[in-house]
Length: 152
Ligand code: RTP
Ligand code: MG
Image 1: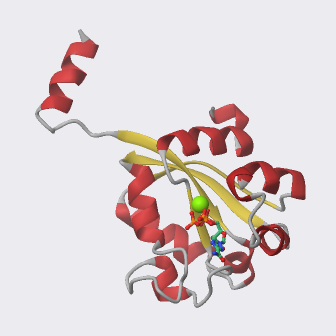
Image 2: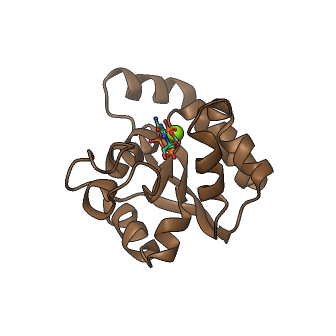
């Protein structure tokens, strides 16, 4: 019965597509004291924080998290950066959370990110770009397991 109700809701467009996504507030944001500002935006938007942890990650976890970039020229400095100090990892939950977080983060290159986005308002770099958000629901599942196995 519950499945039938969910199916009808999706068909007529009234069902909330609740998703979970991995947010990283990167070491540059922690160093600059922007953790509160960044979390404020996501909470104000209506997303829920279901897990959160301040930690410094090692190269092995960086390699797993950025597995698709391992062979890229930009990866060694990215690895250096993401392991350079503590970051905040969080699982955010809400309607279409994956796309909503990416939209609020803004374009990867903060110099080109739209005003109103986190990167557009607060950063000026393609590497020191403050935040990470999972790029699909499949990526979210993979990344959440890496950072929060208990929330898999
Ligand atoms: P992220 O994974 O860090 O949230 O960023 P993103 O999805 O917006 O960008 P992605 O393509 O996954 O790239 C990961 C990080 O690699 C650096 N990057 N540099 N061509 C380049 O020089 C280049 N492309 C990507 C960025 O720092 C980006 O955040
Ligand atoms: Mg990415």
